[in-house]
Image 1 (cartoon, helix red, strand yellow):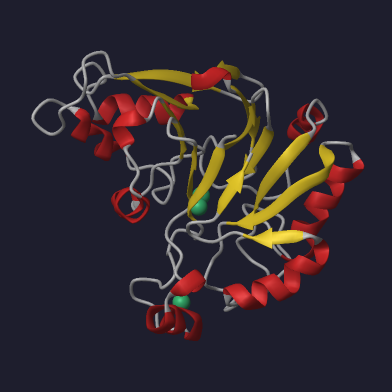
Image 2 (cartoon, rainbow, N blue to C red):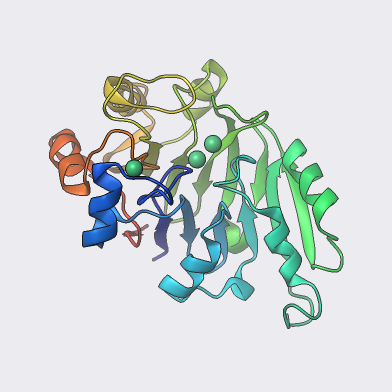
Amino acid sequence: MTKLLICGSAAAEAVPGLFCTCPLCLKALKDGGKDVRSRTAYQIGDEIRVDFGPDLFYHAVKYGLRYDKLRDLVITHDHRDHFCPEELGNRRKGMSKLPDGALLNVTGSESLIEELKSKVDLEKCKLTVSPVKHGSRVLLSNGVELTAFDAQHGAPESLFYAFRAKEYSLLIANDTGWFPDQSWELLKEFKFDAVILDCCYMHREQRWGHLGGDSFIGCFEELRKQGSLKENARLIANHFSHNPNLTHEELCAWLEPHGIKVGFDGMEIEL
Ligand SMILES: [Zn+2]
Ligand SMILES: [Zn+2]
Ligand SMILES: [Zn+2]
């Protein structure tokens, strides 16, 4: 059994937003609980991490994560809430005592890998890289096969990913609006046990850059219609903005009748 951990469940500004005085952010700061959301990231077991944004230190401390055990870092796009390449510089001698031969492979778009190379000495930091584009497949640790899909988002090259292992098939799709045609086509090759979709907004209809409103629910329906979901597939919403001003409880009241679970910091899913 592999465990998927939602390390963070917020959009770029987090909840509570650092400087925000909206009712949701003030409530989150006062009451804590599931309304406190750090920037979106995931861990699949101990060895695979998806996105490495500004809350990576908080995630390690909060969940007791051992980043020295990571073998694969998979990055969706180079917006700063998802990727802080400079932090990987802390793998170099003098900053971390890594075991001999401990390598971490970074998978991401070509431009993201170029940016990483410009900021960090790969050899000194014991990093290897796998540049990918839509349709690329990479074998990750523990025999997990990664497939990259074009997302529809603001960063120059934004991707989302499927993870296929013997015992599970998982889709993590943020940040993205309504999928481009080529991604819908490639998704027909998959039958997912679990799908996590970008749900940045619920208070307005949104198809470009992120999903919100009816198109968010419509995206799950389309996946089901084209046969990309197993019958009992788990559907999870994640990557929430403070803008809809909806608490975790209010999001649950909206989405659970559609069979969709609301992601939160610390949510665990057994794959
Ligand atoms: Zn984001
Ligand atoms: Zn706010
Ligand atoms: Zn983004």
